Image 1: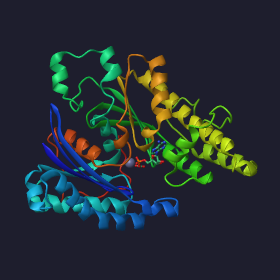
Image 2 (image 1 turned 30 degrees about the horizontal axis):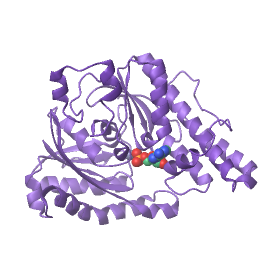
Image 3 (image 1 turned 90 degrees about the vertical axis):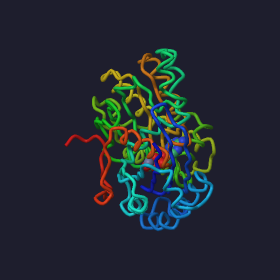
Image 4 (image 1 turned 135 degrees about the horizontal axis):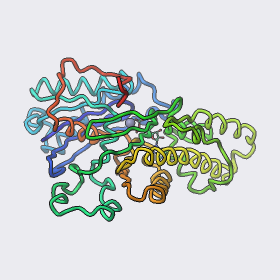
Length: 376
Ligand code: KG4
Ligand code: ZN
């Protein structure tokens, strides 16, 4: 099955081409254009983002066509596509519409099948992309038969025996624990009551005068610091639920920095504050995830979203799981597919297409608040 997928939910415009079957991925091409313009505003400006998507999308289409067929001939590109997919939500409504409408126009012009994808499901499916840590530790625990190994292909796209899985989604807009019972079967267990984990990183980084998006920069600064120097709050850590809250942590760091303003130019102080903040966020995320995994008895834990690129979270979640649930398998998305991209949207669409369910493109509307796995 050959899919063309478009992502435009926030400030990254992206298109991917995926040729995949049950044995695995045969070909994957993807292009992303990140909007640098928002850095000067210290955050994403929705109106500006939508205009940038509209300006960029035709060039991205040319770029993906060049990669796939070696020319920008749109009609020829259409001949090697079976399904068109696009992110339909959640996200910024005006941003979503640009990618979705582009996809709908291509669906109509090429007379193809169409699938509208949930952005968070997309992040989760980044764990099925080449480079995801699917094989190592788990293979030692549960050796695969030769038959199953060949079914998997090289990338794990058809991996069996993963479910039930627990998913920790940590992005700029979302922090959630979901139970995944099978492909496309999600149940929301708990979410953040206020800020997302990515926001906690970004807002603290902003307080410290770092650029936007601040997550990677705060994490870089933290690497030189001691995470044990300052004891910032770990909200809801001891509550017996799957909810998160990060607004209090940010406020606490803000007051702390105000009281120690004179030290803000001291590199050691800055690194220690960054490291202690990062440790507080990672502690809450890893402990609540492992607790939920123990309670639910899942086989697999999947990490997803932009903050999944954080190396402390990747390492410490793995260490805690190895200690507390040695038989469970942790899957980490490849670093390059942690933040927004269209390859993950294409894989999510593939697993839906496999069930034979497609969407009517004429009725597919952007849904800014589309919640994955909320029982209705
Ligand atoms: O998933 P994503 O690209 O966009 C949303 O759908 O929100 O996530 C972006 C978020 C930002 O908050 C960014 O600061 C954070 O992911 N992020 C990180 C790291 N890389 C990206 N946070 C901490 N450490 C990182 N290495
Ligand atoms: Zn995202």
